[in-house]
Image (cartoon, rainbow, N blue to C red; front, side):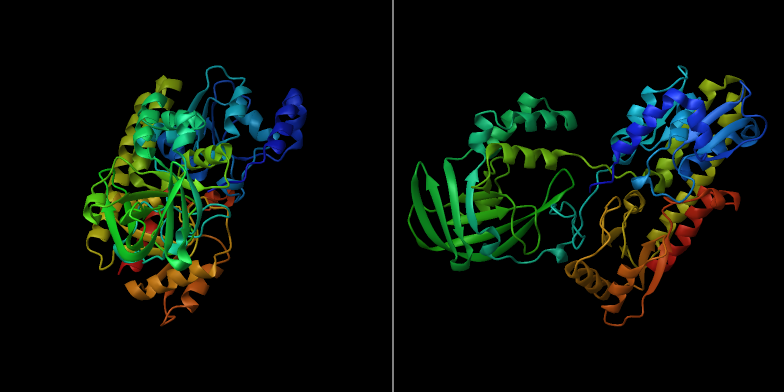
Length: 510
């Protein structure tokens, strides 16, 4: 999902740093909780971007919070995904002893901000770096609204979400990508895979040479008439094909896939008798590209094939366009909402305590004692969540909204459906999305439709209006993305909000 990144505004802020004192006086300050004079040189200065970080630091500081200058930048309800720093924010970051931020695409501005740091002993905590290999990429789920220009490829779905498809989903003239791999047009794609994966670029190229290899340079499909034409070395072979169903595959990686089967009923001998399509889709919809498995032995033989999956893109696309499309698919979009996992919170809090101990060794034992007590509380709440799920009569939640709770549901083995991914910039759901989610509510007999905090719950209300009974409760789970300084002053804290979310979850599952 694409997020709002306004670099122009940020560049203006950086330019203003040349007159820091004047600019700071002209900008509205972020929320800071302090006691004593802020100019004291021995005062611990800590800046956080979002509320959970801020509250965790407060808990770990304990009594030492009175001698610290603690700032929460996103203090006025601005969402993490649309926040841009002010000049005053940049100055605070540049001077602080400890800076905490999430580290996802929404924080793309941070790298440049840290270059302006005036405190050479500054410590920085990037939450995604702390969690390392446990962070998740955003996932598309059946029914979820795709952002404009992006179709979903599903890797997790329920069997009942898979639908039959017609050959017309693959209609068109298609070209093999194998020649582009061979002539090095896709080398940049292999480089990107190496950056994100566990192989070298050369190893990935070798892997895809096996995967993409084919002597069929072109496939032309007339889905309306059930005809496929395969061109090999300039010679075309045509056949008429009939749909024969699909098969679901569970891969060792934990992801899932579907292949759609077609059998030749008439045509040239050179046209393959059995064909399977895979395009990462699980329901009717036009393919943007596809993998194909074709042969004359049997469907079972093709189903065993896992190493060679010739891949085809529209014939009108250039090699450069195919490369750019592949690069876009390789761009990992991390789910930034790591704070909504109690297990993650325990790991992050320990990292905060360790770092505070490095900065302020005199109070290291205090920080260790505070974090140990707090982690014990978090672990206790974690057990309550798991007990709730284990004893629940349902194991699925449905959000008529964005879905930032991926880490939470994965922690406890819950299933989910949602209108949008957690970081989606979309705000309008299509008829297909509304209809799909309403049918899911009916099918699973869900008593609640969930939302995240906010004044408008129009999508959830529309889903409810399209169900059979129209008697579901619309409940809110708090994502803590827009907690304000006023909320903090009124006693908001991470633990109590997670307790509130647990109570809502109990209703939704029972």
